Image (cartoon, rainbow, N blue to C red):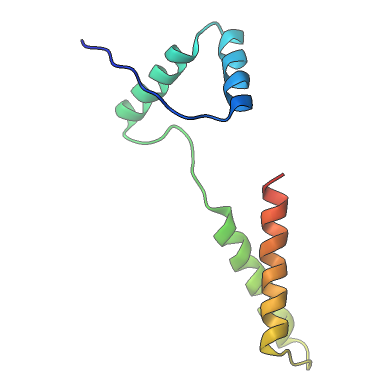
Length: 98
């Protein structure tokens, strides 16, 4: 079987941490990546869940806001609503980029 090189770009800190992990479990990075590839090909899926929490979070927040609006007589302008929505988005992004 022919072997080829695979080059990927990785954050320097992540690479070092991954190398340390691999060493701690008795393998090198190449072996770990090959195990990952074999698992994907065997299972025909990624060996972990990929989720988009962003959409769930925004949807939940909008539902909460809708429920609050149903129980109040206060009326909001379009600009106030957009500002509140932007605040929710910015809060989510700042919490998930840390």
